[in-house]
Length: 221
Ligand code: CA
Image 1 (cartoon, rainbow, N blue to C red):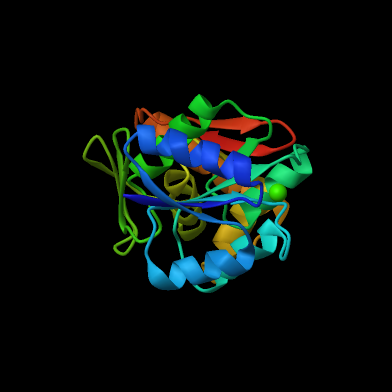
Image 2 (tube, rainbow, N blue to C red):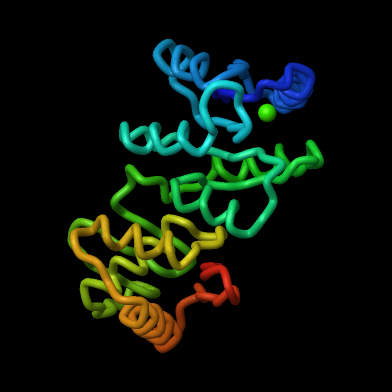
């Protein structure tokens, strides 16, 4: 399993590389967005660690470019920008996780391991979290093997949550994910849909819970 470290601070990049190698992960170091592009042409990576402050292109634009090209490789952002708005921006543009500098190397390894373990990646159409299963193609949902009926928007909301289990999903990000499904929603309609999904899961004795994180969004756990 190979990881691409994108970081222009050479010392930090090598420190991360050394820690990854102790965990048994191979890695390459790209020191700019340009180098990252070259590496991606040569090899495929299980995950990318992406510094936002790169010398040539802003990391957020690098991330946008990857997702525009339908490259769904898990991306963990590293940045000194720790504001809530910056975090939301990163997650909105398709980052899978976010770590603020300075960070503990053990936390980076733990988060990376969690990313690599996540089963509900974007290419998967049969999602499973706790006792909930969602067949994205057939639009079929079961909780404890009992069928649950949900409307189209509710299914889109559930899918967005299941693909991001354990991660905070901002309202904006949720709106974007659902919009990509072909239609947009008002803020209120979105809240109603989240409420319905939460209630239907609870009524069916789901082991999953949608928690509201005030001012940020939601968390499925
Ligand atoms: Ca930097």
